[in-house]
Image (cartoon, rainbow, N blue to C red; front, side, top):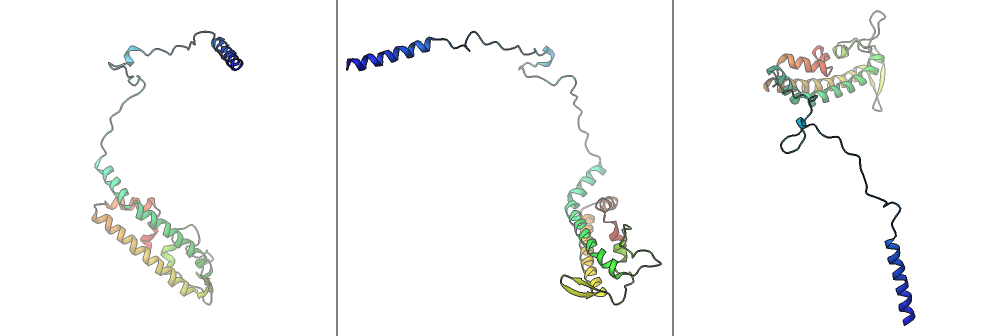
Length: 194
């Protein structure tokens, strides 16, 4: 038992001696570089810093009546007109293959609405059709008049939605010039010719 006590005592003394040995990293007091001093003008009574002379505070001016009207029109009509622009684009993508196959060209010019002229909505109902041409529409074979009827039905539905959006804007106080500007922003002016 005495031998065990002596062995534990030796281990304990060795641990105490190791604790007294200084680490090579602890050779002195840690010194950090001083931070630059703030000028007295930049400090307030509480000690918090104020913005320096380079920061300027310009008070926001209130929006003019026209700007407030425009913001109200955009907030009211942005989502419906954005959706209308997307559906108009899908309708145009459906119209182009129909027009290139079915619409008769006039005087050697490409068929109306197949180029970048933007008048495809105006020619949807009035363009002259080529006789005897058939198309594949969603797995079925249809003639040009049948394809035109489908496109016109889709266009009529979109036009009635656009008219409802215009009525909503009018009854909500959207100015006519702002309506025309929104139509131009969303590239929906072609509906005026439909």
